[in-house]
Length: 378
Ligand code: LLP
Image 1 (cartoon, rainbow, N blue to C red):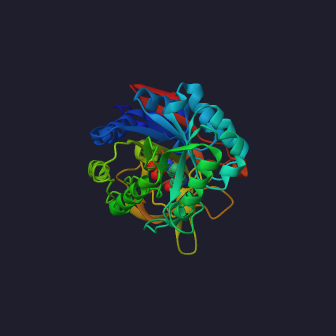
Image 2: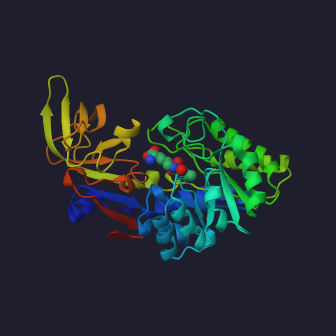
């Protein structure tokens, strides 16, 4: 990474550690920002993917904004120097108090349930408010991360938009934006495009819109054969819709994974190799307390043995050290693993360190940033 051997980083900081590659984040950002430069747009990094302060500073230096989901995230972004109007707040089932706290900071807010309006009545006069809508359409992919279908808790079902219009009159607020987020890592770009089509359908309902927030869902490569979302064709589709609807609205996009997913690595050490009844297990000094994605979403992460890259290929269940069924990969073909070998789990930049828990009293791994020829703990 930046001509620094990975082994050197391990020697200095030990394992388990997260290692991030700053330039990779920059490259992803540039790709997306070039694609969306054909329209008035802004990238709001979904900081839930990785909220480390140094990562946020990289995004800030690139000119990005923030998508936050809690008051603590908003405060972190403000403390780093993001301006309130560079932040969007799209909480899910937050308390009324939390919403009021963020509104008072003058941050753009996207309300995800019509039931909030009577509860916020006194705060709403003359305010601009965004709506997160749920069009109730099914899309493919992992249902644990799909968010705009009939059974999802997210967003205002579009059947209640008339009600919101009545509340608008009653409480004197202005709907200045519509927000949609269909899910994460959406493999079929047509699903993403359909979600945009749905969003545009409702632009006719509100007269004072200033921007559309298209959420994210951009796909990244977890497996070698995966293809990343073609952001140029996606942006071109949005531009066409804008023309078709004769609108001139700013577009906000909220990528998490796309910016940081492939910029992170979880480096671990093999504690033990053990033979079970049928399968061979490689036990790492890590577990789903550090990277929950395989166990929670059946997510695939590439795994490599960097200590023995020419070793004979063998099949392993790669497991963690928690007192749980705690498996990173089943029956995975890897170069022979030996006790002490360094095993790197790839694509661990998003929803990895940010979802760490200290179960079994095992601590959060250190996070290391390799950026501009410096290697430092962040
Ligand atoms: N905007 C909103 C409103 C969101 O809820 C999310 C993700 C994003 C943007 C960013 O989506 P992304 O670009 O990262 O796909 N922990 C799961 C993903 C959960 C996504 C939650 N919301 C995972 O590891 O796959």
